[in-house]
Every structure is written in C-alpha cells, then in structure tokens.
Amino acid sequence: MSVDTVSLTGWGRTAPTTALRFRPRTYEEAAATVRGCGPRGSIARGLGGSHGDAAQNAGGSVLDMTALDRIRTVDATTGLVVCDAGVGLHRLAEVLRPLGWSVPTPSPNRYVTVGGAIGADAHGHDQHHSGSFSRHVQELELLTADGEIHTVRPGTVLFHATAGGLGLTGVILSATLRCHRVTGSWLSVDTERTVDLDDLLDRLSAGDHRYRYSAARIDLLARGRATGRAVLTRGEPVPGDGRAPRYARPARARRTPFAFRPGRLPSLAALVPRSLPGGACAALLGELRYRGAPGYRPGELQRPAAFFRLLDGPVRDRPRGRAGSVRYQFAVGFGQEEALRRIVRRISRRRCPSSYAVLKRFGASDPGWLSFPLPGWTLALDLPAGLPGLARFLDSLDEEVAAAGGRVCLAKDSRLRPELLAAMYPKLDEFRSLRAELDPYGAFRSDLSRRLSL
Image (cartoon, rainbow, N blue to C red; front, side, top):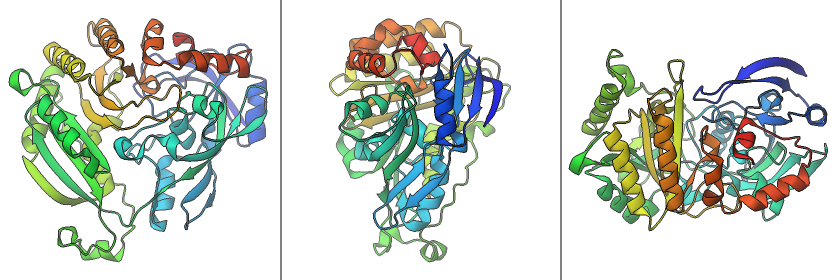
C-alpha cells in the first residue's frame, strides 16, 4: 500500500487542504488504515470528480480507492454487476455496452467511481425517469469504524444513511448493481428553444414523461421578457432493430449496434476570444448557444456521448485560474415555481458569468437521508470563485431555497452555512444519531463534515 502527503481539492479547485493519502489494494489494507487513522479520522476518495470538499480531510487520512477497481462478475442475462467501489463509471460503461447493458444514471463524467456515485447518490439526466444511482444498488459491502465489513441492502437504516451519506458511515468496498438493458447505441433527440422560464417549465411539465433523458441549458444572463430562456434537449433510446423510418441509421451503425464511442465534441468556449472579460464572455457564449440552436428539431440521431456532451458542455473542463470555480446546485419542490423564478431573476440581474447552467425536472426522490433529489426542479451553475461578493450572494440564495423547502446539493457544496442544513434535510437528526452510534470516536471525517457538523 502506497502512502504520501498530498494537497487535495474538489474539481472546482477551491479550499485545498493537506492529508495523508493511503492507496489500499486489498480490503484488509483498507481496514488497517481505518483502524489506525488517528484523531483526525479518514475519508474515502475516488477520482475527485465532485466540486466540493466531501472527499478532503485536512490533517487526517484519505483513502484513495482507485486501486480497488476489479469488475468481479457481469451477468449478461440479468444485467447484474458485482464490482469494487473504485471502478470508474466510464470504464464500467465500456465493458457493459457491448453486452447490451448500460450503467445506472449514465453521464459523460469520466471522474466518478461506483463508490462515489453511491456516497453522493448521484443523479443524471434521467433522474425523472430512473431515479438516482442508489435506486439501482442491490447490495453493498461497507467497512465500518470498528474494522468490520457489513453487507448492506436497500430498506435498512444503514443503507438509507450510506446512500448519499458522503462516505461518513464507512468505506464502500464493493456493490452489486442492476443495470439498464439497451438495444443499441443511438438516441433519438428532440431539441427546441424556449422563450423564457415559464415556457421552459411548461414544456418540461407537459412532455418530460415521454423521454428518458432531459435537460435544459438555460441562459442566466438573458433579462427582461427573455429571462430564463433555454435550449431544451431530450433524448430517448432508439429501438435496436431500427425498423421505424424515423430511426433509420447509417449502415455502419446497423453493423455495430452496441459500439461505444465516448469521443469529445469541441467546446463552444473555444470559439470565444479569451481577451473578453468574464461577464462579456459568458453573455456571448449564452447568445451563441441560444441563437445557434434550432427552434425545433425532432428525431435527430445522436450517439450518447455526443448527446451528453451537448447537455453538459464544458462542465468537465478544469477551471482556469487560481481561484477555481464554485458549483451551486439547488432544488425546490413542485408548487415552489415562484421561488425558482425569483432566484433566476436575481442571478440574471446580478449578471453572474456562469459558464454552465442546467435546469432539470426531478421525479420521485430516493430514501437516502442526505440524498439531494426531491420531486421538483433543480438548477446547477458554475461561478468563478473569485467573483466579488459571491459568498454573500450565495448565502442569500441559500436562505431563499431553505424558505421554499428546498435544498442545496451537499456532494457539490463547498460553502453552505451549517445553520441552514436542518431546514434543507429533514432526516439530518437521524443521520447524526446513527453516525454517533456507528462511529463514536470519529473514524470517518471530512472537511465537509467538520464544516457542517455532520
């Protein structure tokens, strides 16, 4: 097992802290690290793809789980997969797609492991259809603070605390996943422009049930009657036989229906001069993206990689500059549309130069006590961490979100004030009580857990 001292951040490169990093190669080495972690505790870390500080532990230990990356079994008949927690979702997709299966909550993000997806209860562009990642976990193996390994299944309190629990109940070592059957590697994609936020919400409410994947790139710098205008993109898997005329595919696609081609599309940001100031650059990007999209284009055939890249844009590019970027994602329930409108108007008036802004409709939530999705609306945006007055502005948005019964995504957070947490997560007391019972001496800690008193 390798050991070194490193400075770690989330993907946004804010608030670096130094920890002792262990890289266990066996479950026994992971257990030994937890038992000897010292007074600052330990936390598991995957590929470092989340923006916040959930996988940092200043002055303590961090378990780099990426060496535990075995795919143990794949049942090509049932779609059940047993794998170590350090397996990346992208690698798993490469193995599953030729067999006619897809990972739960597929994403273009190459920097998420199976353990990280469970610990964050990751959601994708199909949450309204398929739920979050933990819904597809049949069981998992959890290393707890006493050094023991437990098999944890859905429906138990330990599963509810672990799914979305940000690694604070223990180290996820492996999982059994139920994957999605796919009949090919193409999506039928409908793209349309919406004139404002109300138009967008109406279209999502009326038609989202017909699509597996759905998200809108929203222009947060548009003002006046155009406030909240967006490019709405939704996709549905194409039947494997391609018999319907609208699903006619190229001959090469019919010859290799399960080909997995995760290529990248060029970023629109590459077309914008770097000399432009941040606000002007973001405004121009928003204008180009909106004007360049079709008013309405149904049934376009796209590979999944191209589809998700169009939705996420440059979201996985490393932020430039010393300050990094802050990912802010919140959700409010159905019936709280006016709160969403107020927040969008406030962001628009402040001219926040967000390089990424996506609005989605969430379906039913999953039982994780700290799981983020709730039935309603979610908006995610990236902001330069050095933006003047950003902390005060986001604090005020937090208060609006909490007053509306909404919540901020903890897996992406790096600055939420702890006094708002209980209003956002009603099961917080149960989570803290179970943590105190399982881990009375604080073997599992992180920068996020100390900041929010989890």
